[in-house]
Amino acid sequence: MRVHGILIVALMLLFPVSISAVEKDGFQFKKQPELQQIKPKKPVKIKLRRSPKDEYTWELAGDDAEELVKTDRRLRKMLNVQ
Image 1: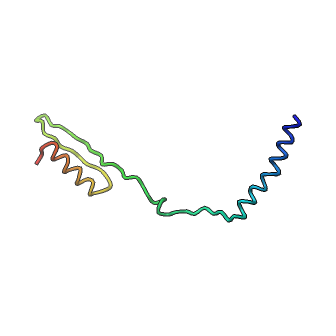
Image 2 (image 1 turned 180 degrees about the vertical axis):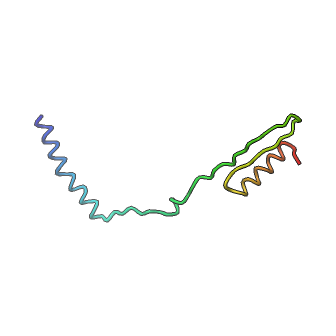
């Protein structure tokens, strides 16, 4: 029990020293706004339907118009739709 008390006192004495050492170095956190603004791209959502005549139709939804056009072209090519 006595060793436990001595250990606690030693830690209490060393802890303020370690905090003051960090303050003396002038360590500062830097925020990088370019990293905060990066957002993952949302995928294009596709609702694919097949009619009784084996014809395909689809609805595309998404934020990026360029990705929507690319997806539409790929679907037309894969499904042989004009």
